[in-house]
Length: 78
Image 1 (tube, rainbow, N blue to C red):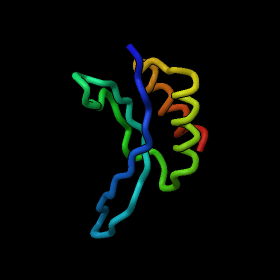
Image 2 (image 1 turned 90 degrees about the vertical axis):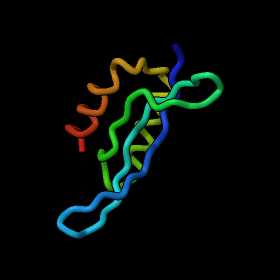
Image 3 (image 1 turned 60 degrees about the vertical axis):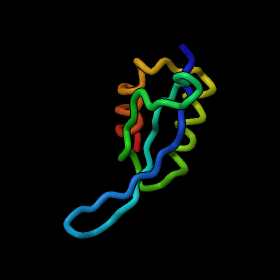
Image 4 (image 1 turned 135 degrees about the horizontal axis):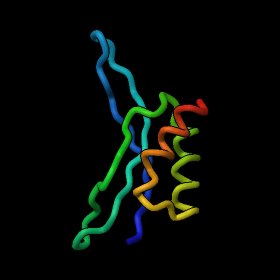
């Protein structure tokens, strides 16, 4: 099954302060509509490193089963 990876933006509230974080979502087509299979929303406050991660995941056609380890490695390298 082919997956496509996208950068996602989420606004969070922490102690009354709103902040924006970027993450990654694995998407597949289900009956012509995209469906999110797995996502990690709060990886980084800067979208550039997440965009690079998404690019590599798509280029290497990462299987979604490996996404948790990839996200963990991404966080460890920040």
